[in-house]
Image (cartoon, rainbow, N blue to C red; front, side, top):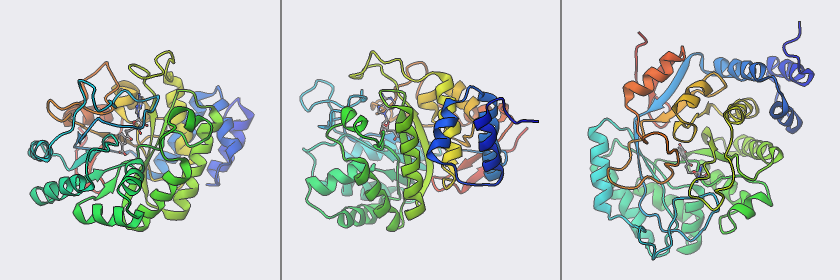
Length: 369
Ligand code: V47
C-alpha cells in the first residue's frame, strides 16, 4: 500500500526511511503536496526518531535595549527613527532590574536583541553584559543576532574576532537566530536593503560557532518570498551547519503584517505555517531542534505544530515589565505564558514537557500526569 496519494511523497518517504538527505527538488515537492496528513507523518517520524515524545520549553525573558534603528526593514514594526516620540534606549540599570525580576521568577535565560543604534558606544553593550553577568552568573545571556554583530564590527571598526571575543568575555553565552530573514536575492534586498547579506550572516554564524558559541537560525516566511526562496534558505543553513555545526535550533517565523510597511499582505495561513514547520524538520537533517515559536504562531497553532515536526515551544517569554517587547506582533494574546500553561499545551498534545536551559540540558523534568 502506498504511503500517500502523492507519488512524489512516496519517493520522499523511501528516502526518509533510508535516512537519506533530501534535495532542493524534494523540498519544493514537499511544499507542493496537498497530502498534509502524510507530510505531518513524515515530519513526525523524524521528530520522534530524534526526540521521542520529549518536547522542550524554557523559562525566559526578553529585553530590548533600544528600538532606534537605521536599517528600515519593510517587515519590521519595532524600529523607530531617533526622533520618534516613542523611540527609547534603556539604561543598564533597567536591564539589571529586569534580569533580577526574571531570575526571581525562575528564568534561566535572558534574550537580548535591539535596533542598530548609532548613538551608542560599543562599551554600552560590553558594560550591559558584564553588569548582568556579575549580578546573575547563572542567567544565560542569549544575545545579539548576526546582524548586530555585523553592525558592531563595521560601525565600531573592530574585526569580527574582536567583536566576538569582547562580547564573549563580557558575558555573551549564545546568540539568537534573528536577522536571517530570507537569504535569497532579490527578495532579501527588497525587504531589508541595509541589512547584511546572506553570505555575511552565514559567515558570522560560522565564526561564532568556531569561537565555541552556539547560535540559532530563523527564517521569516509568508511575505513576498517564493517557495524556492524558502527551500534555498533551508539548504544554505544545512550547508553552514555541515561546516560549522553550532546551530542548535531552527525557528520559522510567521510574518505578521500589522504595523509594517507591508500591511496589505495577508501573512501565512495556518496550513502554510504547518507545512513550513514540517518541511524544515525534513530538510534540516543536521539540526537537532525545530521550534514552534508560539508568539508568532499563536498558542493553538504552535501546539498543533508539535505534531508537524516541531519539538520546542520556546519559552514563557515574560515581557520586560513596562518595557516594550520587540517582536510581539501576535496581537491576539499576551506575550507571556506561565509554566503551567506551556506544560499543559504540551501534555494535552500527548507529549512530554521538559523544561530545558538554553543549551537543551533539562532543568528539571515535569512529570506527566
Ligand atoms: O529577525 C520582525 C522577525 C526576528 C516581524 O533564537 C518578524 O531563540 C514576524 O529572531 N512578523 C527576531 N516576524 C526574533 C527572533 C527570535 C525570536 C524568538 C526566539 C529566537 C531564538 C529568535 O523577528 C527578526 C525577524 O525575522 N520579525 N518583524 C514581523 N512583523
